[in-house]
Image (cartoon, rainbow, N blue to C red; front, side):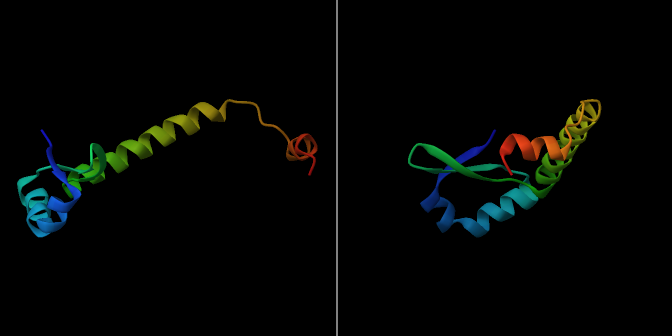
Amino acid sequence: MSKKLTASEARQNFSDILNRAAFGRERVIVHRGKKAVAAIIPIEDYHFLEELEDRIDVEEARKRLNEPTIPWSKIRKELGL
């Protein structure tokens, strides 16, 4: 479960929050008012999210490889370039 802090609390305790993320694997959600605006997460979580995003991109690219291509000349003409 993620801990929730205001931006002011996060600013005042930034070093402690970083240590807790790095060594305690804690996640912190930073809020401004009622809106969540950022997260401080362990670097392992960040790397996992990056890898997941890359896999999703590769999967999307593979799907699109089978789509028909449109010649640049046709696109230029349609856009009036």
